[in-house]
Image 1 (spheres, rainbow, N blue to C red):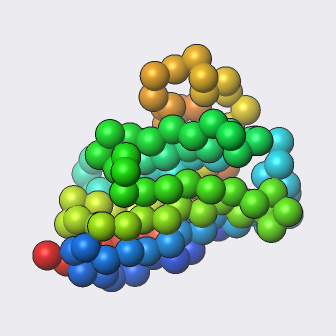
Image 2 (cartoon, one colour):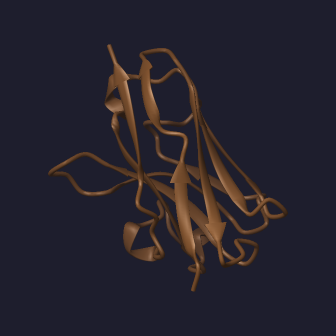
Length: 127
């Protein structure tokens, strides 16, 4: 089955940047769409960004649009999330998941569309 592993999280001041990576081990990402979600303790997992398997279609939540950029390299088997101008409200554990659901059919990708979640990477933004 393989697994997805998130990396790149850390502690950063407001206004700073981080780059998260979702790397596949024992599987290929080339045939699936990848989504990033985030979760605070006691809250539901929230959609952040997604990218289609070909890399041409991308989706962003309104809260990160203009600040975050999702990209993928099928040769490197990774999907990255570049996060700029971070704010304290971005603090959460960030997860990546994969799906073959036709994301074009929805206004916003749903957590239930995705599976094969990684263990997550913590992002903390201090004010």
